[in-house]
Image (cartoon, rainbow, N blue to C red):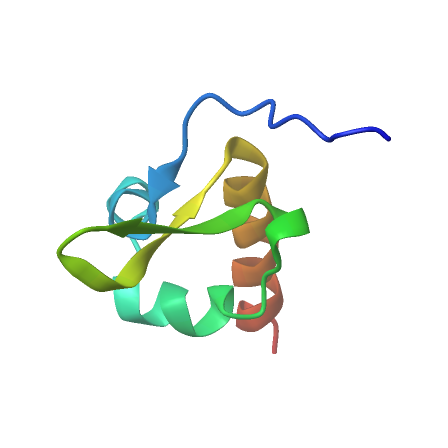
Length: 74
């Protein structure tokens, strides 16, 4: 039996990514909902956060940029 090890040491929340790339959080949430864990997106939950916060690995930020380009195409 083999176990996949997580090789990411950090993630960025959607709020932080939105500020860094100059986009609105709500719009990013609308398009990022299409992403899967394989695309570098995860949900982070704390004790006082029942809905969780979307977060991205570095690869996830790249995939999000690709989705942004797709959604802006005419």
